[in-house]
Image (cartoon, rainbow, N blue to C red; front, side, top):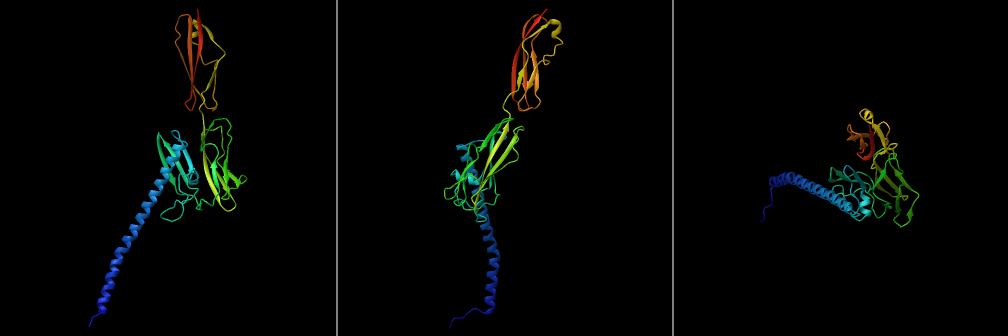
Length: 278
């Protein structure tokens, strides 16, 4: 005849199993959490690698500059899978999440910020492509003609009347970096892409003077060689001017060098003939 467990023995087994569960469940839970975080970090690194690949085919920022993209721009260009997912939340990464390529003193860095709320299937939202460059340069005090974007809905219909461009006022009289976003709404779904616009000064100052100088020996020592020149710069900022001459106390023909440096470091030099008489 088989002998079964006594009540005490059953209670003991239950208590033992409970104790084991108290130990095992947290371990399994922590292990799953660690695995999800590891997968999440792998996905972020994958996006950074895609940014690097995008840059190799498109543009790289100069020192001190940043190129900003949305995740949808990487998807549209074919560098990221449409269904790239956050392993922790099990949701799609937002199509409008901000991605940055940063040139930090010659070292390229990649930044992925998981923000945004457009977690729709990319096959359903409008397709958007930047016209022109993702990073545009504008010379200070010039004009900028925005080429906009090209967009079609999931059915291939061209969308042109519902583009919203958002940017702090683009002041071409002020050097700076502006981030312009383009958002289009197809009626149900939206999409957002970004363009970086850098207003910069790459033009040297302009030095002007009436012509060559003729001075007597008695005038040379006291003459202010800056007195009859004008220096202008497209930035409107103050310009530093230095004068170098090799004139000595002997009559003859000499050359004076004017050097003008603007606030952006652009330099213009100009030579002027000076004739010294007795």
